[in-house]
Amino acid sequence: MTAAPTPTDPAVPADAEEAIAFADLGLRTELLGALSALGYEEPTPIQREAIPPLLAGQDLLGQAATGTGKTAAFALPLLQRMPVGRAEGDPVSLVLVPTRELAVQVSEAFHRYGKDLGARVLPIYGGQPIGRQLRALDHGVDVVVATPGRALDHIARGTLRLGALATVVLDEADEMLDMGFAEDIEAILEHAPAGRQTVLFSATMPARIDGLARQHLTDPVRIRIERERPVAGEAPRVRQSAYIVARGHKPAALGRVLDVESPTAAIVFCRSREEVDRLTETMNGRGYRAEALHGGMSQEQRDRVMGRLRSGTADLLVATDVAARGLDVEQLTHVVNYDVPSAPESYVHRIGRVGRAGREGVAITLAEPREHRMLKTIERVTGQRIAIDKIPTVADMRTRRLELTQGALRESLLEDDLDPYRAIVESLTDEFDLVEVALAAVKLAHEATSPGSDDEEEIPQVPVRGPREGRPETGGRGERRGPGRPRTGGTTQVFIGLGRRAGVRPQDLVGAITGETRISGRDIGSIEIADRFSLVEVPQAVADEIIAGLRGTTIKGRKATVRRDRDGDGPGERRDRGYERRDRR
Ligand code: AMP
Image (cartoon, rainbow, N blue to C red; front, side):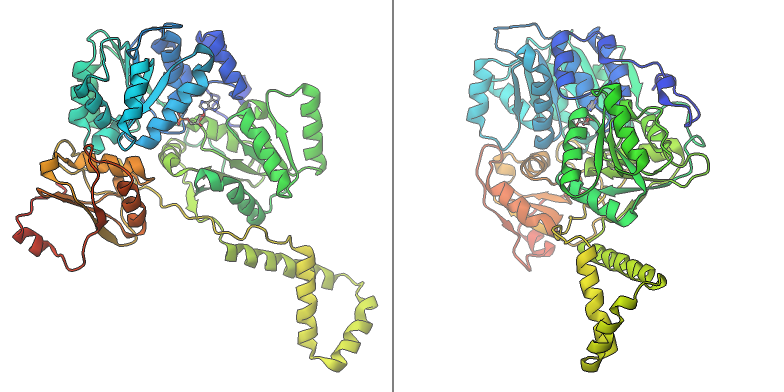
């Protein structure tokens, strides 16, 4: 993307950059108020690039992954362009997304940003009772965020009317095509008014996305989150690693990583003021000496915080990018990205806080599974590897604590002040073996010095998605997409008592599974659709979750029997029953 100029030397503070505020982008005050209340301090690069042309009504083709702030990049202009206080019922914006999870997330984002504008936002996706959606549509909505299959259902019923649409957004378009939604998307776009604005965001830009864009976008502005000029060689030489962890486990993961790394002083970067405040409180509650630093603080407050860090009264600084610009603290040994930064440049600036002037530095990133791709982008742009590490386990933490106790004992042995205790040892050795006496002493020392562990729960290891680039491109009705991520555990087949006669297509099954569970479409293996039933290959480890999810929902409007496929029901036997196999191509 043609990003704002960025200093080429990481030692140059980023505030040398021309700071662009949300207000400079032409957003109305209601939206600015909402952003400020959320603690967003400045637009991300994709927002800087996308918001002005979208406000002007232009079509846009954006290459951006999760974590770049792309949702706000399209949601804010759409909200701004929405006529205020509209009484009419038909939506003016339609956002198509691949999964239920994303439909909910995106519509929540619209709610948050658009609450002062009174935006009426409705997520619609398969699995949710259709009655509720019908009533909501009937009452009138401004923005519909939908999965393609369910959107098409409503269009066919005449309950979702597209005549008033001013904008259609295809979010995570590559993912939608991967899931076999190509035809549904085409059909929906055909129903949309010709003069509408069309916006397409995709993490990757394979030929099919390009084709989709060429067909449905008019003279689009193109945006890439990667700079054309690589920053290779600019990034400081620091040890870089990342942990893939679900959001809810992040505070515990941060604690463990800090315990293992034992930084002299660390800076933890968060995206918003709100998160800075929340995390500071959490970490203080967990016994760390954390201080918050963000743009909402006065200079005096900030000076006080920096003083505490420099004097060693605090060892953890939790900060936003804006607040940490140009910061140079000698004690800093570690930079932690609590979230993946919104652009590679931001990553480079952040890790530039350590590893300066020949000092050693460590940069650690906590990434949610969905943000894994952004890490890859950063690696590519910086030309440096980010190793994916395993989150320390409970056993690792125990070992680490024992090491610390051992270190403390060694120090104590080297000091020459043990005489007062000699009498105790001598009297105990009359009764016990010397080694046993030592063991008991070590135990007491360990219990006294090592923080009691109230954090004994394992943090689940989240499997990392394989890179999607270069995967075969398939999809569409009746086809299966290319192989999913390499599976580590075994797979099993789930039987679903609905098949071709019920009009079931592979994308209905993928949609139902991804809509009802946390499983990604890429985890699903081959799908076989027979006349009266279907079989879906899924990872063993998540089969129960999928079965529970499917039992709680409807497919093509019908409840289905769902269970693990019977043992010994081999493929040969199935063929004998006149099975049609729709396998991966
Ligand atoms: P997205 O890439 O749209 O999934 O957004 C990633 C995360 O960044 C979401 O949690 C947003 O709430 C947050 N976010 C988006 N824009 C900003 C911003 N300008 N400042 C701080 N946080 C943001």
